[in-house]
Length: 468
Ligand SMILES: *Cc1c(COP(=O)(O)O)cnc(C)c1O
Image (cartoon, rainbow, N blue to C red; front, side):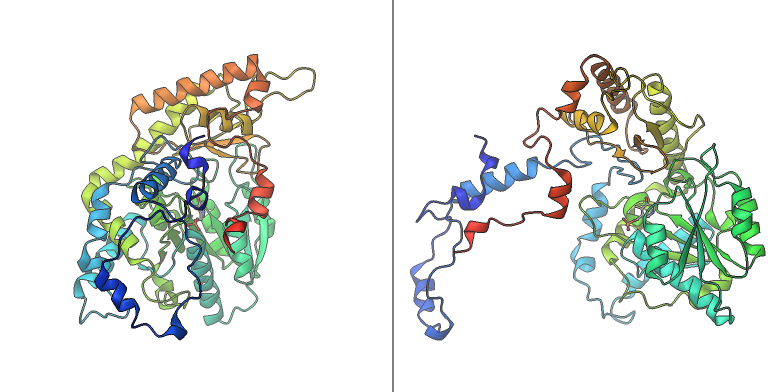
C-alpha cells in the first residue's frame, strides 16, 4: 500500500505526537476557566512530525501543475508563471496592505493600479479599466452591467437582447442571463466563424449588444469582425469582447481597433497568474471612451484581487513591449506546429491557420469496426495521463462530438512539443491496435476512472467516521 492511500486519521496511533509542551505551558492551561474547557480531547489525528510531513508531501506530489509538466488545456492558457511575480506579490509591502487603505497611506499601491491600467489600455485600445472583477465570468457580468447602464442612461430600456455565437464560452450566455438580459444565439458557418448572414435578421432596436471572443473558441480569428461590429453599432448595440484568451493577440491586434466597446481580460490566463483549482483570479473590465462614465458600476468591493494585478504588472514590465508581442506570436506558432504534426492521426474539422489553440474532432482511426466505436476523445485524454501529461480540454466547444482542444502556450520549447506529439501519435497507434486498452486507461495513476458524474454531484469531502 502506498503511503498516500491513507488519510491522516487512518494513520493515527493513540498517544503519538509531533510536539511537546513545556511544563510552563501546561501550568498556564490551569488558568483557563473550566467552563471554557473541552470535556474530552478533540478527535484529531495523532501523528509524529515525520508522519505529517510525509503525508502532505506525498499528497502534494499527486497533484499536476504547470510546474510539474506540460499542460495543454485549451481555453485556459496554462503558461508558465515566472516566480519573480510571486516574489514581488508576496513582499510584505504588498501582501500586508489593507483594502481600506487609500492613496494617502498606500500611494505605491495606487500607482501599481494606475500603471497596470495604462499598460492594459495600450495593449487593448480601451480608454480605461476597472479592476474590481475577480474572474473572467465576473468581468463579463460587470461589463454587461456597464452595457445596461449605458443604454438606460440614454433612455433605451428596450435594449435587453444579447447576441452570442454558438461557439461561445458557456460563461457568456450565463453572465447575460444573470444580468437579466435575454440571450440570442447566432450560428457559426462551415468555416467555424460567425455567419454574418445569420446575424443580420437578429439585429434591431431591442439589441443591447453582442458578445464575442476573437480568436473564437475554435482558435480561429473572426475575419469579419469589422463588418460585424459595424452592423451591431448601426442598430445601436454595443460590442463586448471576451478577452479571456487575449494571449495570441498580444502586440498584434487590439480589441479597441476591432470595434469593441467593452471587454474583460483574464489576468490569470494571459498575464501569468497561477489559476489551477479555481483562483484567485482577476477579470479587469475596460471600456471605450464614451462608456467611461459607466465604468463605476458596483460589481464588487475594493480593487478586486490586488496581488493578481501586481503579478500581471510584473509580467508585463518584465517582458516589455517587444517580448509581449513575441508571446502572442509564439503561442500561435506552437499551436499550429502541433496541429500540423498530428493532423494525419486526429480529425481536423476545420482546416485553417489557428491562433493559440485548435480543436480536433477525435481520432481518424479509433480502432472500431462496423459501426462500433473504438477509442474516444475521453480515452485519449485518459491515456495521456499514463504518459505524464495533463489532458487537453475535451468535449468543448460543443460544435463537434469528439472535441479535443489543445493549447500549448508560448512558454513550451520545441523539445516539449515534440515529446507531446510523439506521445499523441503513439496513442493514436494504440487506439488502432487495441482500443480496449485505451478504454481502461489510465493504468498508472492512483485512481483510474471514477464515475465522474457521481464524483461531481455527490463529492465525499470528509471522512464520515472521524466525527465521533
Ligand atoms: C476562461 C474563460 C472564461 C471565464 O473565465 P473565469 O475566470 O474562469 O471566470 C470566459 N471566456 C473564455 C473564452 C474563457 O476561456
